[in-house]
Length: 355
Image (cartoon, rainbow, N blue to C red; front, top):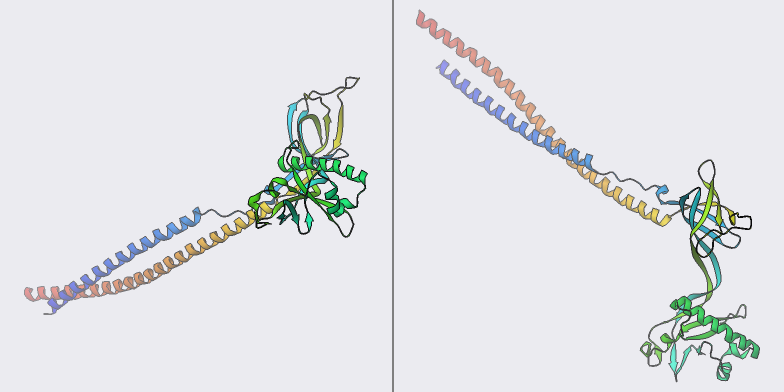
């Protein structure tokens, strides 16, 4: 009976040991899966593109200007032509204090084929008669010679308006005008309205305009003119920065003009270096960077959270594996003890038969 019990116990312990080893293999497989999952997260982190903040230098432009005594000129390009000569293009810029500019639009009323803004009646530009003089406070204060001068001036206004608004100074397009007094200075300022807008019946309902009519007046604007492919030479300092430019005078065909000594006619100008930064574009780029950095940080945090979960799961499996290892050691020790008992029983049995 003792030997049978020992054998039964041995078989039971062997089965338990096999089961523990099987559980250990399953845990190792799970840890391998978690390791692969963790590796994929680390690979994703490595493959992420780290946002780069914008550099101010990328949005900073260096330009060169020169003053010819009347206008400020900004160089737009300098193309080397050989023999130290360049083909220079530049933009002339000046302030025109006597230009047509947009003014606040107005609501116009219509009655008996006349048009009014408030109590002021509009009149056709360049059309002055006795009736207009009586109705217009500005005209009523003018002498006969002043009215004649005003007529000439209004012809000039019409050309300016058609040139600025319609890009056609020769246009016969008509305009309406009213003069408004500045109570501070006492001077009158003209305001102009395109006749086609004022007389358009679709713009009125029951004698009142259903929308504002565009208005123009006199004001200050910045004007530019581009000069292309002027021959010249430039001078640099020791750092390679341009410090002066010499421009040659040319005829209408672009050929350099020469004086009586057969020397090219030219003028030298000092160049001023200007550094300008596109603040709006830079701020847009910085806002984009901040948004991308926020998304990057969120993604990194999300991946790190997943890695922490995987690491915690792996730690739990490692503890289970240690428990199984302890259990396996205990079972192995007990199996060794049972083996000794069985061996002893076998030896005792053989001694009995030998006797």
